[in-house]
Length: 144
Image 1 (cartoon, one colour):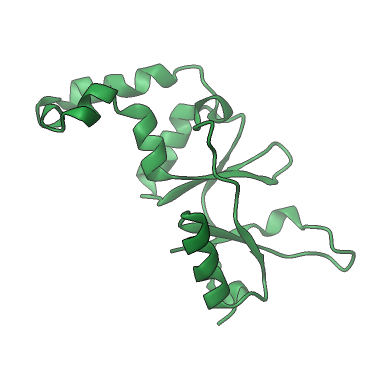
Image 2: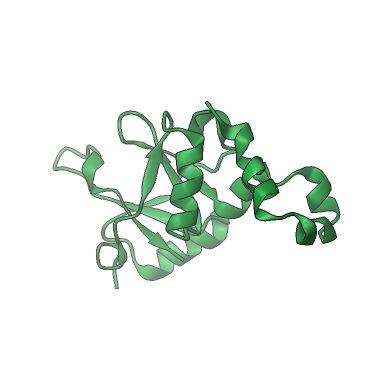
């Protein structure tokens, strides 16, 4: 099976979207990773959901998981208050993950190897025109 057959449209945000909206997208669609495009529609970053959650959870809760059991929804909502006014570009970790991509003819094993090598559960599948230019509207992703 080739990438074109495996690819499905994948929800995404752009670098200038509000970070709070990116969190909603991640949660509402139960995404494994967040696909971030720049203003031109070119992939900017693919960030695993676990790395984004890490940006939200206070360090003291990560150090003592028992604290997470006593934090109620009212307090949990406060975790996103720090995102107010921030764009996705300002919020995502500095160590962003460069988007992995393959051509539409790539095989399933090539996609799996790329996911394993990059430690990112998302690979973009792109098409190119006759002159080799990327077609920006064709971004689809294979999530592993």
